[in-house]
Image (tube, helix red, strand yellow):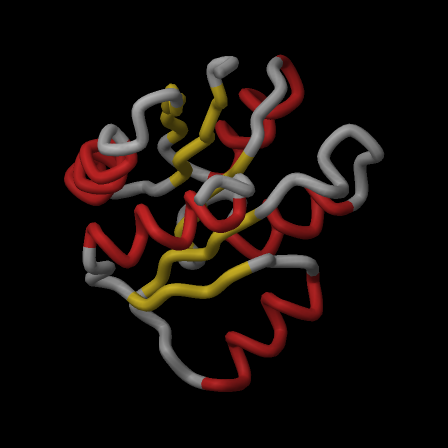
Length: 125
């Protein structure tokens, strides 16, 4: 099976480490990290990813800005985007989904739930 690539964008190094660690349970998934949305945009401009996981509240460019940017490009329009956030209100969830987020998970995210959601979005049993 070919290698899949995930972009993990979060301004918290410990959250990125936890997400990358959880995604390490998916055997053919390699992770690239970015420390904020602006870095995420730079990284996504230079490489192809099969899925993007992003925080909502970050400096420079937040998760909503990153989702909007990804959905505005033909190369990334169909890439699944999972927003991981401590913000759990319905208005933010609706706004992110309307902007093009594929899924919205509230932190702290349970590792098995995260792995199951990413596996589902990548089209794996």
